[in-house]
Amino acid sequence: MFANREIQQTADGSLTLFVPEINEHYHSVNGAIQESDYVFITAGFHQVTKERIRILEIGFGTGLNVLLTLLEAEKMKKSFVEYHAVELYPLPDEIINALNYEEQVCPTRKGLFAALHAAPWDTPVGITKHFVLHKIKGDSNCCSLPASVDLVYFDAFAPDKQPEMWNQKIFDTLHECMADGGILTTYCAKGSVRRMMEKAGYSVERIPGPPGKREMLRARYSSTINVSIFSMNVAR
Figure 1 (tube, rainbow, N blue to C red):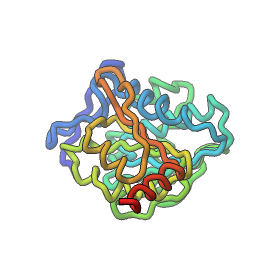
Figure 2: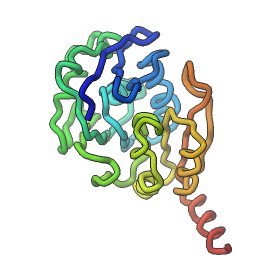
Figure 3: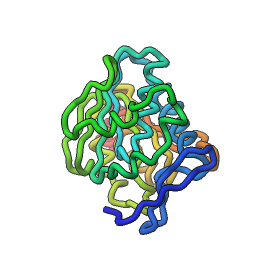
Figure 4: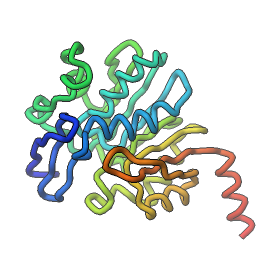
């Protein structure tokens, strides 16, 4: 998709990628690891009380989110995590090998980050006894997605940079894929995105964002909310 990606250091010492073509970074310049940990682990993973969790990430990207999730799942002693991630444009090996996430968050686990990227596409792979990774190479707007998802990490590029990824259809589809009580979390806080989530049937809240960002969105699926909304629509 993009001809050039530049490796840049963020404020917390971790690296990110910059795409000159769209003037966009893969992560916050205030800290790549810091942002991912806050938006997806603290605001998302920590909110799921189940011991067996099914996760769907929209935008595998650098693999930072899955690395942090695996480490946190081990720390919290989750019995099993099934992690699905959709990516249309996987990164080349030379970029993956230059990223310093492993050195920053798990220096004693040499080869773990490489194993996540080396896992073949379109087939579930057991990374550990309690963590399965299923990387899906495709467009999340039209590819098959897993059902009964407990947690969605929505990590596409910003709406003004990648508008095709932020549309009513995808939020409707994600809502249909989720288990009751499921959570969707994203760094984005735009009103238009919130309204699309609400129209899809989610209960959406604005919560404080990571350092450098005032707010972000977290959406929750509830079959009770869906029934209520449906009844209101029928009444009209």
